[in-house]
Amino acid sequence: MKNIFFILLLGPLFNFAQETNKLNVYSFEEIEKIQQQNPKPLLVFVYTDWCKICFGMKKTTFQNEEIRALLNAEFYVVFLNAECEKEIPFYGKLFKKNRAGIHQLATILAEKNKQIAYPTTIILNKECKIEKQIQGFINSRNLKTLLDSFLPKNQ
Image (cartoon, rainbow, N blue to C red; front, side, top):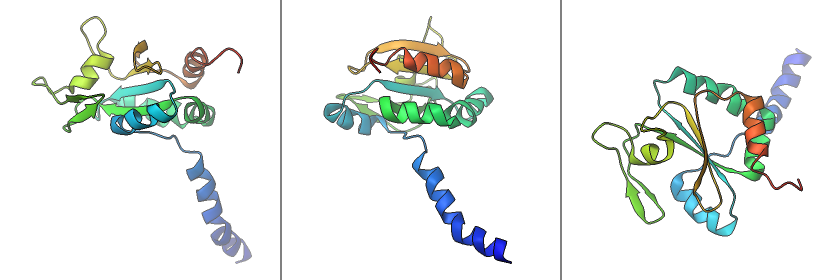
């Protein structure tokens, strides 16, 4: 009985600890505002709801504690569903879903050799220009190496 009471008493503390270490994911609208105050590189993860590889990357790579800490400290993160219905205003332009069912912003960011693959991870510099596009699954170790390459050398 004491064990149950102890778990009930401390349970909320463990949940709070887990919540504080979650990945901070922003919308494009939010990015536009916060980039003006504190510019950072941007990681955009383009996915679809039906993509099992995308789901796997969300559940493994982006759940890695070291990856979350690095992304939260040094990057802004946006998850973009390539098939989302909503219009997205970003830097004075309005992007929407095209006739093929793919969002215009996903096409601009993830298209490589006239094709889009899911998932695609894109790194944009502080000026929101594409620096790197990687199609397919990226494990935690490889994503950390990629992210580290965009950090100032004195860190």
